[in-house]
Image 1: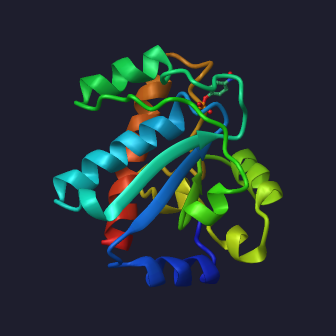
Image 2 (image 1 turned 120 degrees about the vertical axis):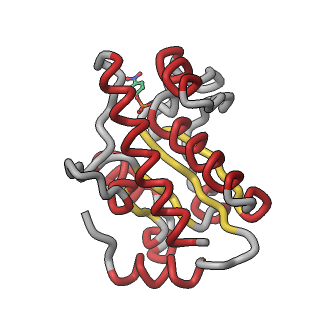
Length: 172
Ligand code: 4NP
């Protein structure tokens, strides 16, 4: 999955800025997007760039609002040294004003975000996480692990580790 020219231009404009606000979005906001937020936070902190990045996550659905991430995702993330403490919230129209980039995990997330985006400029902020993933076995989306076993959660964390590193490099 590739970035459009407009998305590449937006990322080039953001690169090196003092403050970059990123919202990660999935369906439930209890598995993939809070994990992406945690993985990205660890990467920016490791590079001493924690103060430049405002990171958050949200879901297109509202079933789990107020909850911590799924226990399975918390356990798998903790094994990699990541503590996930995000409280689930639903994405809203005002997020398109607040954030510079809104990163969706799969095609349905992207479609739902496009339907919610209030203006053409805000639509340009919606980019697929998979555009930054370059693992040997290629995925064009981050697969939903909710109905999967342990390997589904590990795969998500592997894809996010790879994608967030590249996302950071694109913005550093
Ligand atoms: P996520 O996974 O989108 O990665 O947070 C899901 C979590 C919950 C549900 C679906 C997906 N759900 O249907 O409740």
